[in-house]
Length: 233
Image (cartoon, rainbow, N blue to C red):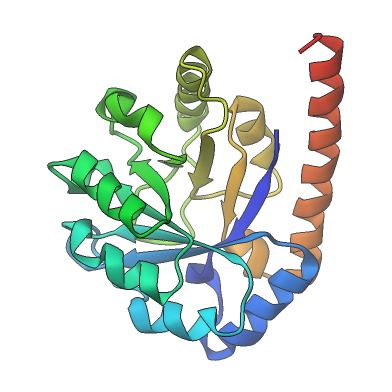
């Protein structure tokens, strides 16, 4: 399994956002997680299209745009044109997820769907074969700095089982919320392979934090390969 680190700019110092993005990219991060909040779906506001356009000019990272907004279909085209590589919408914010998926596909972008901690996986089960990624929120969306909800490990495991049973091993499982070096391996054991980290990246020595995650991922990929070989797969 391939693992990806997606530093969340929600935890970055926006006074030095450009230089901090350069640091995580140079240190080996592959993705950049960009939370978009509208003050309605979640009780907070964050970046919009102009910020994505601005940082796209100087960054080659994979832009993982997470729309925590009502009626996300309204802004798919704008974020795609601004530089998003993947667009994730919340299943709780839409009445017609297929229409949203089709709009993202029409812009030739990857599709992600997200579920809040209390949202059952049955809500996304019918569309699992139509997305590239499922984002499992491991805290209540809207605010950074929350503690990881341990009951989410079981949810991640169940999701990975659902994907495997359907032959959808290629679908990424992303986790977002309260991820730290102390709990990331347990999330990976459960089946997550895209790791969103905010303060665990931007708090302290950013370059060192990124390198620690990347070294862990590389080691896990080697271990996974050995296990797969031993199992004759």
